[in-house]
Image (cartoon, rainbow, N blue to C red; front, side):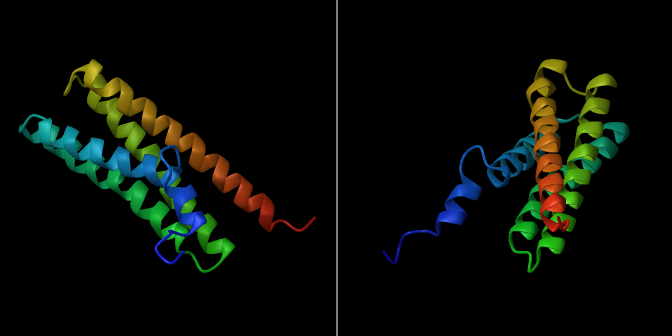
Length: 132
């Protein structure tokens, strides 16, 4: 079966997998940024959330290509940090009333879930490294 994708690729990119979730978050962030007001304050927030929101997925992708378990855990940790930062910027955009709360509720929840998933992956990766 030459054209069949590798099983690990299919599993990691499945709809609920962290790669797919982080990619969907980045797409949602970019759509949000395009809809944000053009005033100076909103644009500062837009740039910040765009950087951190797209950084989550790029670091998850880099983790998938890691050469060692240690490098994998390091990249997942960076992705988790970016996800936490994204969650912060989204809450700030909501609380500063830059965008309507109803527009942000689901994306804030998605960012929070990604933080939790990445935290669990990182903990599992560190446990696997600890000698028994």
